[in-house]
Amino acid sequence: MKIGILAIQGDFQAHAAMLHQLGADTVEVRTVTDLDGCDGLVLPGGESTTQLQFLEEEGLYDAIRNFSAKGRAIFGTCAGAILLATRVKNPPQDSLKLLDMTVLRNGYGRQLASDVFFGSCSLKKDPLEMVFIRGPIIEKVGSGITVLAKHEGKPTLVEKGKILAATFHPELTADTTVHKHFLQLCANGSGPKKSSRKRNS
Picture 1 (cartoon, one colour):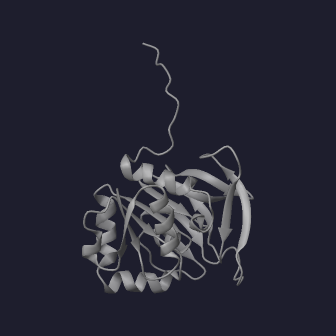
Picture 2: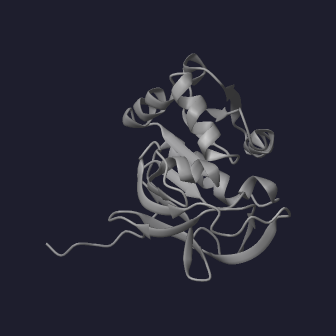
């Protein structure tokens, strides 16, 4: 499996290291052609307005939307989650509009050091470690979006179809749960597995 990682800001190398640990190949994405042959794409943290400007200037804005339309999986963390949202506040800005949710930029504060919390996550039995670095808050999610993890009642990991977004940085922990789930989406897009039930005839 080949995963592209937008490589202009953020700790994209940490994403690559975790994906390599799980057996995936990665490629740094800076041009439209870098997306060729990719099964999935990671949009890492950084500064979302700077990233958005880069995407527009390099033609990657439309290329990423087309990538999604073709059924490819996309995973956004922190600034990447902001880019995926349909509505952005504090201040308002444009986005890729691929995931129906409203996010508040810098919702977890403008701290210089990272804050680490443990929250509930449907992908694992034990609490999930979440590293926030000026992370956004997901204020509202649209219909059809599955909330996979929360902190203090607020969604921190959400998905719909093959789009996955985290307001925290799973790549800065030793826990591979979230990236492993993303690779499953890249492979089949089935999302969280549900137990099968017999139907009455």
